[in-house]
Image 1: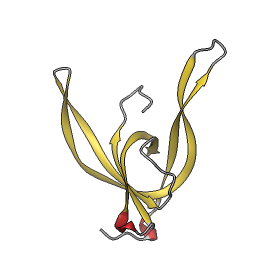
Image 2: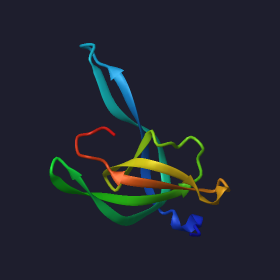
Image 3: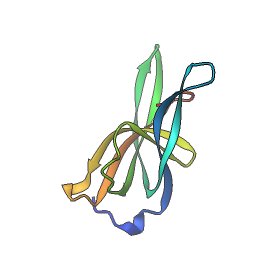
Length: 112
C-alpha cells in the first residue's frame, strides 16, 4: 500500500505506561503522554475471542504515521478518545518513511 503525507490528517497521542509511588507508598500505574502524532486511522476487520465462556469482539485497526524509531509495542495510542494497544510496529517497505501500527482496542479500566 502506498502512503503520502497528505493522508496523515488525524491527530493521536502516543502514551507510555509508567509506574510511580504515591504518598501511601503504593505503586500506581498510569499512562503518560509522550507525543502528539499525525496519521491515518484505518479500521480493519475484527475477530472474536472466547473469554470466560463469552464471545467478545476484538476491534482491530491500523494507524499509519511518519517514521519514528522510538515507537515500540510498549506504547499505547489514543485515537478519537479511544485507547488502543499496539501489537506490532512495521516499517513500511524498510525505507524509514512510514510506520504501520497494528492495534486492538484496550479493555476498559485496564492500563495496557
